[in-house]
Image 1 (cartoon, rainbow over the protein chains, first blue to last red):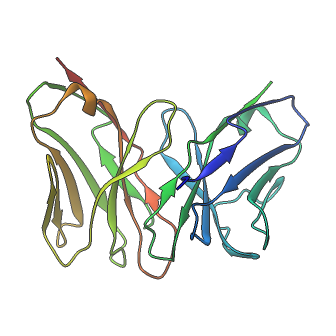
Image 2 (image 1 turned 45 degrees about the vertical axis):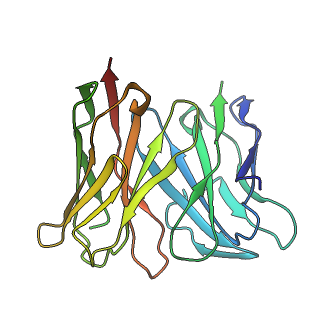
Length: 113
Length: 112
């Protein structure tokens, strides 16, 4: 029974490139959340998705960031034209329902050169 | 109103001692209060959680104390062990399905 799978675990991009982070939720989970963690900071909520729907994107920067959770396949967090300030650990979590009992993945660590 | 304030930022406890981490919230609509444990290079893992209909919940060496009137909750780790050294996050949300709001974390070091 695999947990939440994130890939890549580590990603290096140069300024201006695109970063794509993927998340496969736990089996039986249809709710996906993305969080960003900066050094010495807590986990900042970015977006909450269910299959094919964005439920809450109040934590997403207005530009360059997008997320999707298609009917088939993993959820994807996409960062266009990355800047150094985007360097962070991005965590995906999933839950079976909307009660917020979250299981987190191991994270994807993005470094922007 | 959406903030969860956590203290202390870091904590050093001797082996066998009690570790206490505190959190405070503003939003009275919050009704779910979990604690997560995170080791370096890993994702956070759910440790213990409480809902406001009880004032205390205990699981092994870990206890959550909840004070609804003060809008505060705390994590107590009894008989702290070096293996408990990690970062601990409190969080809060409400049943309307809004996302968990996390505190900034407490780095716990248990010296042997």
